Length: 56
Image (cartoon, helix red, strand yellow):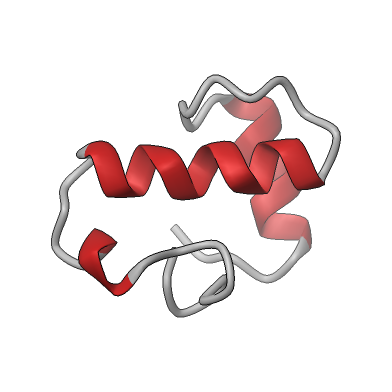
């Protein structure tokens, strides 16, 4: 997440296997792209991330 969206993702999220920092980054991304901001990597979120170049 940090490599693709450094402006949304704190460096503290690195190695934070789905912890608070990563959830916060996902929520920011979801809000900014019009998705429901729940902090989870659901199907819609993954598709939107991939459309911006995110790789699983």
